[in-house]
Structures are given as C-alpha cells and as structure tokens.
Length: 147
Image 1: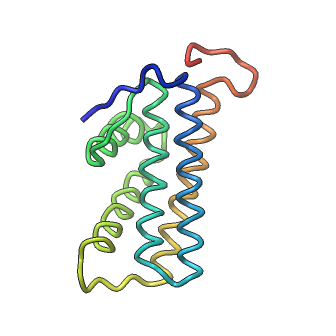
Image 2 (image 1 turned 90 degrees about the horizontal axis):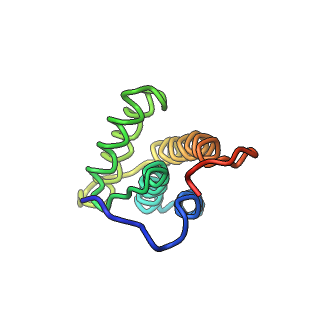
C-alpha cells in the first residue's frame, strides 16, 4: 500500500527524517548487540534497512507501509537498474529473512556473528542511500526540484 506524505514538510525533510530514523534504529541494534539481545538487534537492523529504503522512495514522494511493497519497489527500481549494487538486493532479502525468524520463530537462536552481519548490512545500505539521496536532493550545493 502506497502512502501519501503531502502537507507534512518538503520531500527533502521527509528523506532526511527517514535517514535519521534508520540511523536511530541502527544505533538501537548496536546497543542490543552489546546487551547480547540478538533477536532484538536483528529486528532493529532490519527496520534501519526498511526506513532507509523508504528514504529513497521519499525522493519521489512515495512511502510504503507494507514491507513487501517497499522492498519490492526498491529492488525493481533501484537494485535491478543497478543504481544500488545487485548484491545489496540479496543482502536485503537475507536481513528480511533473519528478522522474520528472530521475530516469529519460537525456537530460533540468533547468533552474535549473524547479528553483527545484519548490523553491517544495515550500516552499508544507510551509507549508500545517504550518499545517493544527498546527491538527489542537492545537498552538495545544487538546487533541485525535491525541495
């Protein structure tokens, strides 16, 4: 389900907000990792990915509440077209699977190593998306129509 984000600030504001939300989720994942709360850390790493993907969607005024739609659209429009590396699409699928197992499988045992990988993937995607979005919204001195 696509959601509209009109009348709540500029697209640039929304992009920046979603990136900040992703960074906050990633920080929470790191705190949970250090507390050896691996399932919770996997959840927060996944949500960092979800929010940063929606930052990209916000460039065009889009956002998705349905995770499948957000990830599907991102893969179709940004990974398949190689705006972001194809490998990132595979990493996103894995982080989604591990989050699902962490949240819903009663006897799933999350490991520290696996959780560290999830956090690394989230961090990597946040960096890639932030760089891409800053170029798109003209943070480097170029005025665009995103504002």
